Image (cartoon, rainbow, N blue to C red; front, side):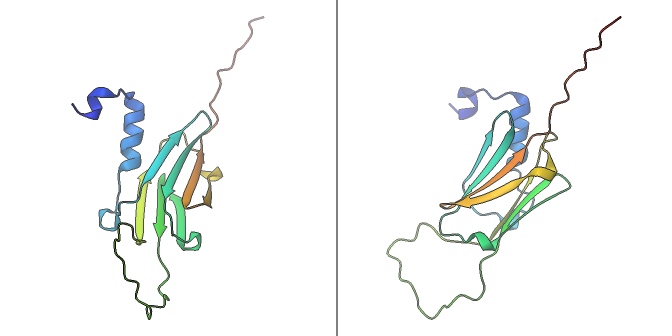
Length: 136
């Protein structure tokens, strides 16, 4: 039994998750764990990236596309070779691009980096409330 048969996700949410998982530049995709969280006020995209340096990230939003790129420093001292007994985790350059939903306020996004988690907050646009007009 597949997970799709067990869990029900509304169509609009599935579309958003699919859009968020569309990597537009497949050549630079790496297996970086990403959490996507939604609450009433915002979407939060978390990249789990221990050992990464926050100075080497660049985050942009252009044409409703969120772009997160990591480029490691090219000035590394490679004189000292590290001998791994097991090397299950590597710091690699990557670029991920995601198509964002319509209800994101693109001017107010923010990002933070804490304990190996890059967190991008994408606030939702304020909902337009219906106007109630009193008849006199």
